[in-house]
Length: 131
Image (cartoon, rainbow, N blue to C red):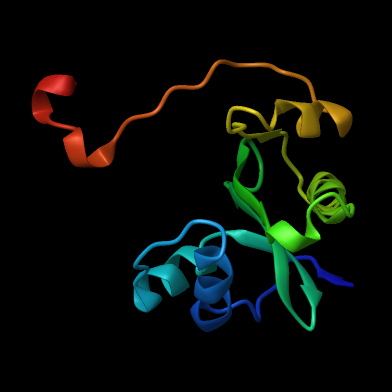
């Protein structure tokens, strides 16, 4: 397994087939490339991309893990745990992130503790009256 911190070679052409195995969708290659260029990408490769953790940060005050994704056949093999350790050791800020329901045990097993409650705003439904 090869791990890359700040993987600048990660491109939409690599990421889209990977993410479609986890979150199937119709992803735009140009928009995906822009999104990847705005995050620090920590990746795991076993010839192909098998895991990825993306961090959005201002580099000083705040950082958030936008997603931690591992292909189903590579789960429970330490890939996600290693990506979390690499994020902790290679980011200059405190990292915040949300967990999908049912995955809390994974994060707690990896020494993380619950903190702030999170909320979501669906951009498609946001309007001026919402504030």
